[in-house]
Image (cartoon, rainbow, N blue to C red; front, side, top):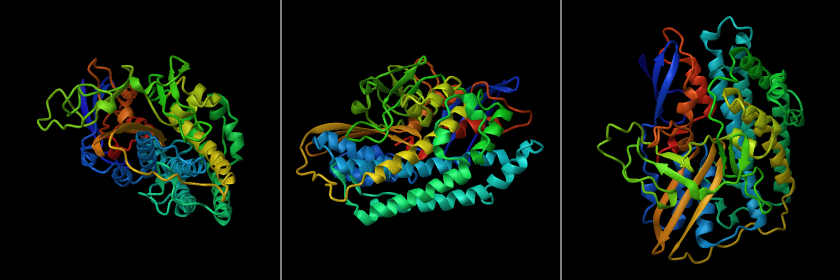
Length: 475
């Protein structure tokens, strides 16, 4: 048996290192290290609770609005404030724009460029992948960047700026869109739909959303999605990087009538309700001090000695003692979509990336509905009022990469503790006290390693299918 240390990875937000035990041309075991400690949770202690709305979005420049929404909802829960319904809908639209942009970026700029590499020269699709997805040069990348920039104009209208907006507040949103704003937003969404239908899917979004099985998905031949699916069939991406079949979603885009994509847990092929009280963060293999605890009771105390039994700054979140995979696949499984549930039976690279394409199409349809429903005469904000001396609350939302939770406790009018569990904390967690690997560690087992490879291409496909955001992972 040999050991490979893979990292740092390019096209990954933040630092990532993966230790692989390799035997007979395949990964036997993996240990995933998040080597960057940041300390945001410690920065927040002792501050005015409203500072969380300014500080937490700066955890990340990609999912900044996700952090804003989670902080706003945690603060709202701690203060008993219910957002204005119209403001809640606009906040959902703002959040959906960021997630849709993230899905488009991941596919075109982070995931697909690996198939333009010389290792695949000679494959029937390689020349097309080179033309479309070569880093900095591919025509698909240029088109996607332009479409993304156009979509982000909505954030200029509704959020004032991106990233790090202060527009999302516990009581709603600071910007009351007028009739002209509604028209401009709908026009922008029509333009983004033209890109999706003309370039990415090559057909009306509703046709792609109507797919119900993995076999039907692999039969899709139009647009850049069709190129990906041709590649996936050729390389066997359905079975590469298979997960354990346990999925978690906090529920995406909270609305007055309930989340647009449902919350819950999927395990052993069945859905069950989510009980957030069952979350614990295990520290046995983390460079952190303390005992396993629910985030509302947790602390962030770095182990400066970096004990030998540990190998990551990342904690190991578990739900009822089990590691859980989170992301677009989990969301669409819990939303009850037939295609996602069929893909979840394999749960590999194809399932994760295919689910993001499915969710991008469904999110576009959702954004159009939210924008069409904007009522300029409505009230978009409820004032926060006096800050209580005591209180606690949680903000459980869905970033593009998966379940994001903020847990806040107030004492003496200031933040006593603040804990954050990000999607990559779930997916890239180390082993727990029982020795059970995190989702990525489990998914890497069995990945092929070709002779002479020091950074196995199959390992890169698996890692990128989770779309890690390492700067969000450790706070």
